[in-house]
Image (cartoon, rainbow, N blue to C red; front, side):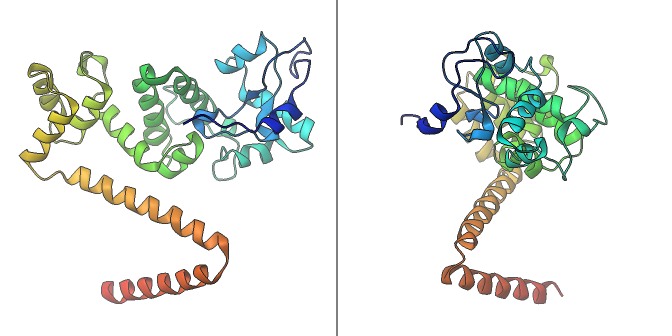
Length: 269
């Protein structure tokens, strides 16, 4: 399916000069929040950069805060407003204001986010680096999966899966390079991840066969919990979508939710 861009907004933002250094600029504006992370062609997410500044921004060698400050001035907005629109604020605080309890991959939330987004641009080859960054956010900073998911543009379920696989195989020596990241993910849900990963390597199992072997061995409580979380998250998104309509269906849904909650309260009482 072809990627769709808001060409009208892009053309409105395009300038013959770099908004950072003033040198001549050509081509499309830079997305501050990448499309891969959920960024769109909003005016406050685009900045015209030259041939020197653009690759530096893509490699996160130019602080994101610097780019946002330039755009905020251009759009007559505050830096905080742009961060809020991109879901980068955490409990109302700017990411660079949030220190890390254990600076394994940066000293602030901002630095860890930039590391993750840089890895995201590298594609499949950076899965372990992405898992490490997510694990730092959750385990070292104490952020909740939904907070992380909102900041990096993924589901809370993926955050839990990435954290689990990194904690199961935290060191390179624990991993088997001949097997895919997906192999490691599947093995991570078991009580003995290293054993299953070794068997998969010895028998040259595909990810499908590994999944089948694990499924036939015992009931997988972790997988069931993941499925429950997936359902819960999808349900929440659907509920929010209906309530935003503010019509008869939304009123009906609120009434039914209240009935369900009252019934649950009586059962637990």
